[in-house]
Length: 116
Length: 112
Image (cartoon, rainbow over all chains, first blue to last red; front, side, top):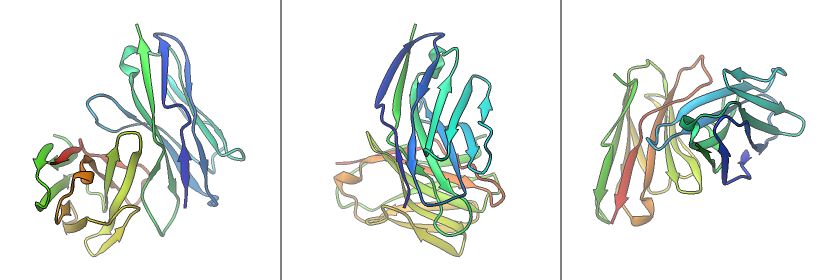
């Protein structure tokens, strides 16, 4: 079974600053996917960024980027030029590639607050 | 229109009542999922379905049942609701050729 750990229950930064959210995971799988989801107060789950484990290049989506360290089983999310609309819960999630048990394994989340 | 819809969006019920949460999707995806979210615990998988004839238990299936009425519809039932089933419930879908799950808006269920 996989586990995902987010060690920062809450973080607060000033608008326009850069912030990094931490995520570590434990798995015996060699091929898998990692995701960051955002959940604003509207409670909708929104995909922020995804990473395929077999790709060494870190994924980037506009102001969002990841630092994927496969050997260390670490998958952090960096938000550059943070905006008030980035205030939300952020969840790190793992999914095994291939057949068998399916579904996402989530961390407990980090509540990110962007201060004006 | 939203690709993944859930009904109802909010529901308050009493202990012992039977309740059904419904999920519909227009994405044409074959895989559908039900998750439960509790404060401080993230989301946990209840059930998942690869197609109409293939339904599988997830991490926390006790006290729940599901029905895949069609490729586009996946319902979650609580046969006899109890207060610790009070939570936010999400449906999600995924296509066979993709790795990304798409979530519905969630149903907030309160069991008194």
